[in-house]
Amino acid sequence: MPEIVTAALVREGQVLLVHRSPNRHVYPDVWDLPGGHIDAGETELAALAREMREELGVRITTGTAIHLVRLEVGRGEQSVRISAWLVDDWDGTPANVAPQEHDEIRWFRPEELPPLVHEPVRTALLEAMRGARA
Image (cartoon, rainbow, N blue to C red; front, side):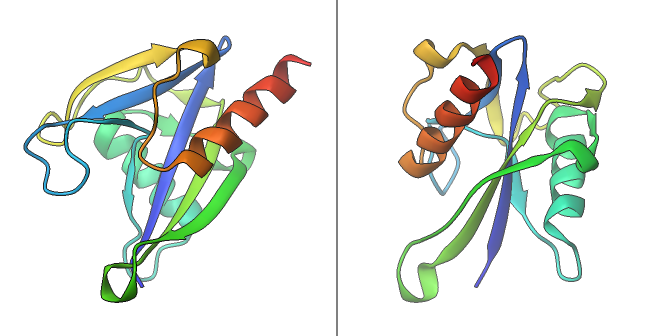
């Protein structure tokens, strides 16, 4: 089963989302967390670090990443496993360095968060962000 990792980069009470390009084959024209497939032999955190470099040009500190949720979506051969992480420590300024994948990136406060591709990810993210403010 293919595995995907995503990261919620959170800073100053806001989370960074990417807008998937309308020409994407899977989940076009929606806001989502940045991320991608885990390559053979990679750990989740290694894949997460690689994806954040490739998509946003930042180097995350994997030792401080907090696991949010893991879920399986799809059916049969179309199934994938998704693992979402909260990241609040990185070097660099996030930029859209993968314009073929995303046509925009934007910071959102929790109350502005648009629907995400997978609602359980959004729910876990909002709970984690609420917990951080408590």
